[in-house]
Amino acid sequence: MPLYEYRCRSCDERFEVLQRVGEGPDSVRCPGCGGCDVTKQLSTFAAGVSASTGSASFAATGGCGGGGGGCGSGFT
Ligand SMILES: [Zn+2]
Image (cartoon, rainbow, N blue to C red; front, top):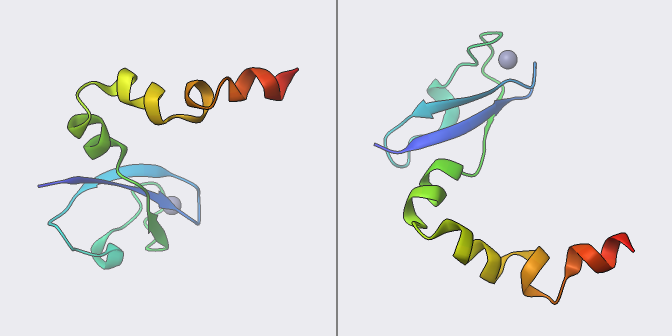
């Protein structure tokens, strides 16, 4: 069962919920304020698990190292 990350738009609380695949946010309640105005975030948990060579793949696709030093040129 995958873990989804949600963010509450009422109190900006971030929390994670175990849900079945395809299940929407309708049954999700914010643990902070109890509200249901929540939005699903990208699952960083699942992404981290699938990319076991995380740092290497991030460097290959990331903006900092891949494009010839995006960060460095941006700051100077
Ligand atoms: Zn809340």
